[in-house]
Length: 80
Image 1 (cartoon, rainbow, N blue to C red):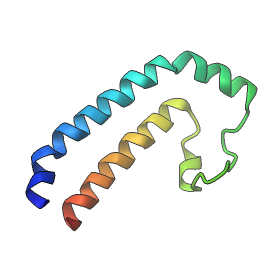
Image 2: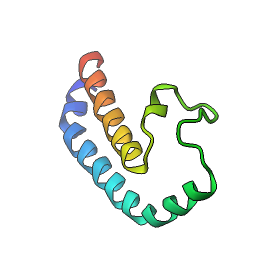
Image 3: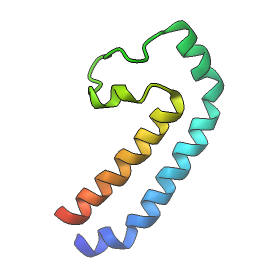
Image 4: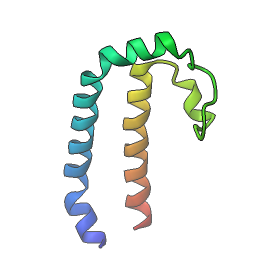
């Protein structure tokens, strides 16, 4: 399992980052309309972590997702 992880790790992360960018652009217009209606920036919603609340824009939320995946990959690197 260890060897396989390091064999596919970089490709998986690159594919994930590409998908985040692609889908992020696709919903960019609608997210703007969404947050005009639902004023939820800075408000804890559902199971959202308090740490996540500091990312108070769509662009920062996308960055949060990328950062989370990179940190998770680093954690796997050390714990596999």
